[in-house]
Length: 77
Image 1 (cartoon, rainbow, N blue to C red):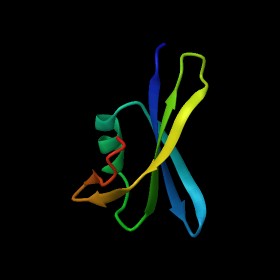
Image 2: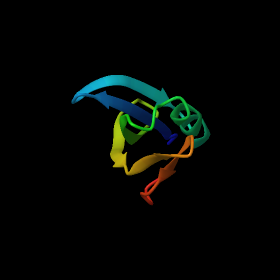
Image 3: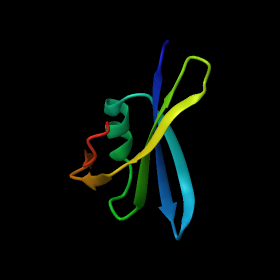
Image 4: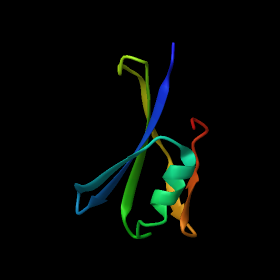
């Protein structure tokens, strides 16, 4: 069975989702973080889907913007 991993970045301004960005790899995720202001609230989710598009798992990763990139604190990458 083929599994697909998708990372979603949600930027939040004043309690509302401002942007949702979807990427397929950690290097892409890192590149997208470079364009986000460090004062913005950011949530990152990792979703694993099967070949039919059914969600196998979805987890929020504990990430922080740091030096024009990001740091993932969670071991569940």
